[in-house]
Image 1 (tube, rainbow, N blue to C red):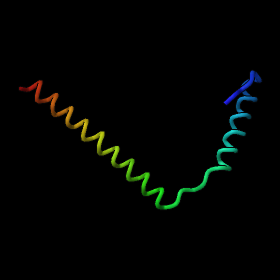
Image 2 (image 1 turned 90 degrees about the vertical axis):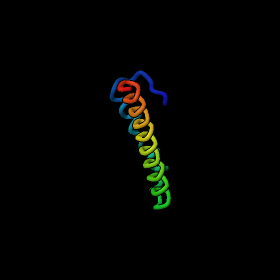
Image 3 (image 1 turned 30 degrees about the vertical axis):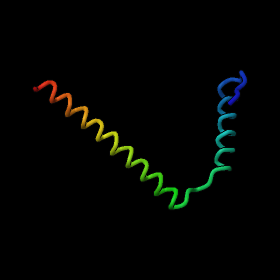
Image 4 (image 1 turned 180 degrees about the vertical axis):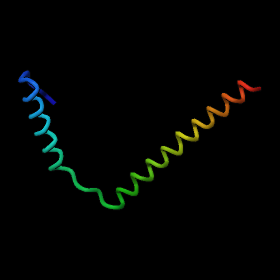
Length: 65
């Protein structure tokens, strides 16, 4: 992304043009793509939660015992 020194309006105009180009090239994901992304997100949430629970459990064990 190269912006010249043209002030904030020039930068805004450039950014909007770039967004327009991106939106022209992207496509709406089909249901399979959506489900795959949802599975990955939920797996990440569960993994982070499990790690946080284990860390909490170890901290409680160390502080109490």
